[in-house]
Figure (cartoon, rainbow, N blue to C red):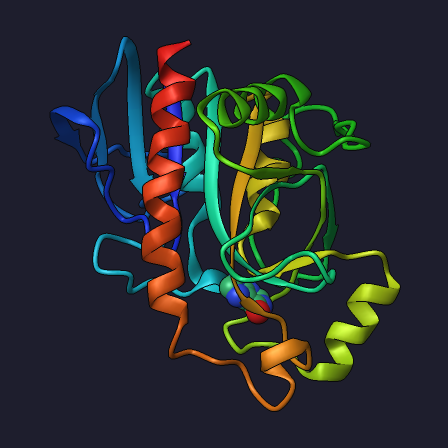
Length: 245
Ligand code: HPA
């Protein structure tokens, strides 16, 4: 079964043939909402909206542990995360789809591990390559096959939010090697790795990051919704293709 975590702009999957919804209990508390189970093509899917159904949970308050645990305990064997990001690199314009290959984590104060101490030996999971290469490759291959342009590789800086960054912070992130910036990439990817769940992200650039291009004097929110809506149609097509494989 494929787990799909939907971000801003993707609170439901129109192409999901729903069988049932379930509130999944976890040792880590409540997930962001009920999981929606069903099929896309010939693949069983479990979907969860990261920010809740009405988009009410800000990035720093998402219960990432509960979401990931709920997907795993429900039988997900791989997870695709959909996330909107800001574009830092000059080719990361609004509307670009990208499958990142690396992460820099600037978040703090989030519950970011399943290890609580005292319940077994300490485990240091390998996180050299934070995304699963097979899931990444499949997303990219499907996109190519159906004619959707998707950029292969980007360094995803995960900031704490919920506020957006300053222009100087974006300059610093770029100096650190970041190409895109979002608020939910971590601890999600790290938790998936702890559970040994193959995980990759399909990101849509929603806006230029602070201080860049038309965000030189403030983030332009007016076009953001339109960009997300158009991009989600493309993302649904890629997910459909992914499930048809
Ligand atoms: N910064 C951080 N997170 C984001 C942005 C951004 O500019 N756009 C969408 N998510």
